Image 1 (cartoon, rainbow, N blue to C red):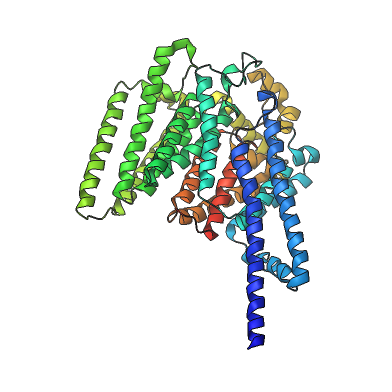
Image 2 (image 1 turned 60 degrees about the vertical axis):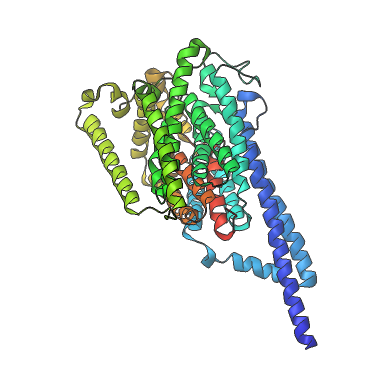
Length: 541
C-alpha cells in the first residue's frame, strides 16, 4: 500500500512539474506576444525617418527575446528534472518534437522557410537575400524569425480572449492619430520636418498610407466580427467604437487599397453571420454604419474644404450616388425593425437559428459577382472593350498606369520571372531582392518611363513568385489556406478566433495590390498563430 501511495505521489509530482513548465512557457510567450500586439503598431523613434527600421528591430528583439527566455526556462526545468524526475522533461520535449505531431500547416510553414533558405543559397546576392536590406528587410533572417515565432506561439501560448482587446486598443491609438492627420492635426509632431511631397502619403504611426491601411484592415476585421457576436452590452459597445474608428481610418487613409479589405469583409461576413437572426441584425447594423461613415466623411470633406486631406478614387464613386444618405437611413430602419422582430420572436420562444440555404444563397451571389468581375476584366483587357466602362475604366483596364503604375511593375515582374532560368523559376532570385534585379537590369527603363525605381512588385504574391520562386509561393499559399481552414473550424465555436480569420482574409485581399513589410506582416501571422494556439486552449467566449 505504501509503495502504491509512493508511486501515485511521484506521478502527481511529475504531472505538477509538467503543468508548471507549460505555465512558465505560456507566460513567457504570452508576454512577448502582447508586446508585439501592442508595441509594434505604435513604437517609433525618429518619427517617419527611421520608422521601418525601428519596427523591424523591435519585432526581431521580441522574437529573439521570446526564444532566449524560453530556452532559459527549458534549461532550468531540465536541470530541475534531472535532479528530481529522471528525464521527464527531455521525454516530453522528444514527444512534442516528433514529426508525426506536425500538421499540414506546420509542414507548409517549414516548406516556406526552407524555400527561402534554398533561394538565398542559390542567389547571386546572398547577403542582400539574407537581410533584405535592399528592400523592406523581408529577407531570410526575418522569414526564419517568423518560423521560430510560429512554432513557439502555436505550441506554447496560453491564449486569452483579452489579447484581442489589447490589439484593438493599440489599433484605436493608430486610428485616432490617423484621423487627426486627415484633419491636418499633428499632436505628436510626426510631420513636423517631413517633405511637402510626402506630407499627405505618410499617416499615423505606420508611415506610408498603403502600409497604414493594410494594418487597419486587421482591427477592422476583428472588431466587426466581435461586435456581431458579442452579447455583453459594454463589450459590444467597445467593439462597435473600434469598428467605427477602423472604418473611418480606412477611408480617411486616402488609399484605394483599403476598399479591397472592406469589400472582402462586408462580402464574406454573411457566410458566418447568417447562421441566426442575431447575425443578420448585426450585419445590417454593420452595413448601416459603413454607409453612415461614408456620408459623414463626405459631409466633413465638403464642410472643411482645404483643412482636410483630399479623398479621391473609389470614395468618389460612392459619394456620386445622390441617395447615399437614403441608403444609410434605410439600413438603420431595417436594423431597428429586425431588432424589434427578434425581440418579439424571442419572447415567443422561437429559435434564433436560420436555415443554411440563406448562406448558400449568399455564396451563390458571391460567385455571381465574382464571375461578373472576371468577365469585365476579360472584356476590358483581353477583348479590348475598355472604353465601354466609362468612369470605372481606370479600375478595370489593367494597363501600365493602372493603380498608380502598379500595372507596369506587375508586367515588369512577369517579364523578369519569364526570363529566369529553371532554378530561379523554382526558388526565385532571393528573398526581398526585387529591387536588386530592377536596379541592375531595368533602372534606365524605370527612370525614363516613371522617373522612379521600384523595390517591390506591389503585389505580395507576385513578389514571392519572383523572389522565392514558384515553390516558395506555393508553400506560402498552402500555409495561408491550411491555417485558415484550421482557425475557421475553431472559430465556428469561438468568435474571437473567427475574428482572427476575417482579419487574415482582409489582409490577404489587400495584399493583391500591396507589399509585405515587417510593420504589418508579423501581426497578420500572429493572428494565425493565436488562432491555432486557441485550438488547444479553452478560451472563455
